[in-house]
Image 1 (cartoon, one colour):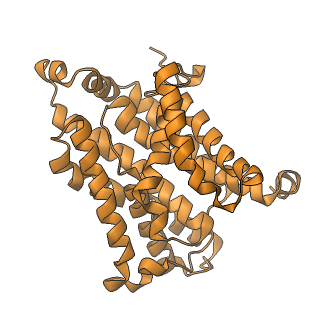
Image 2 (image 1 turned 90 degrees about the vertical axis):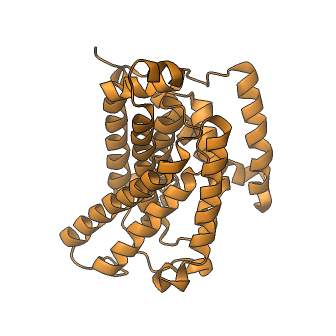
Image 3 (image 1 turned 45 degrees about the vertical axis):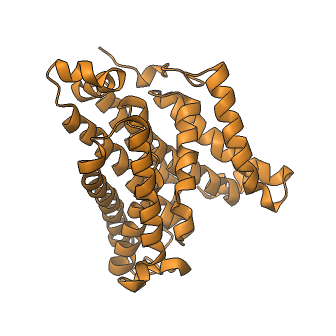
Length: 305
């Protein structure tokens, strides 16, 4: 690990870790949007729920430095990641009870509204839980995320999504995406399966949020505003709806592209993202509406049936 850090540099190692985290979250959105056909614009909110949950638990049970002993701290960290994913899944289920009866743009507006609500809640969280920091941000989070952790998390996410997609549940989700009315006419409980797909996808965002919190050791509500959901939407659309391969490639490509722009653009370059994102979306929709990869997959991601 030390040799790799010396060769590549700690900065690019950290960017690679961030790209892995984004890929985990984007895989979750691909389950929601790409496979189930649910237009969600609130994915960053579930990312934030997982981040704050994992960070709070880690601080409470392992201390700010994670110095409760190596095995204990690593076990607590794993538990906090699972708790972050569980909290995001629970929140998704509660939110899904009313909003998943909506379709198309109405669902997108509802999830966007949820994202705005959660941003306001994060801003004022110190009123009922001072440890979260509110608008000042949450500090003192131990740095637990490492290269093995993010690679393990991404590998697990890919395996879970692959197995779900090629299972009976996955085929039902795709059937709902293609024609919900026809799926319902065939006896499929579309509401139940949409809730399953939505909850599963948001749990990935929660785990990714926990990894993010322990990579940068600081959380601020602005990191989880609804604009961040557009980054993930951009990745899924560019890679191809329903393509795990496309999501992975687009995740790494997008993160490294944004970091590369720091070299050529002024410090205010982040404002150019809101020019770059619409342009890329328009070009993609005009020239390749199915995304860069369409529904093609790498051999190990295909069904063996």
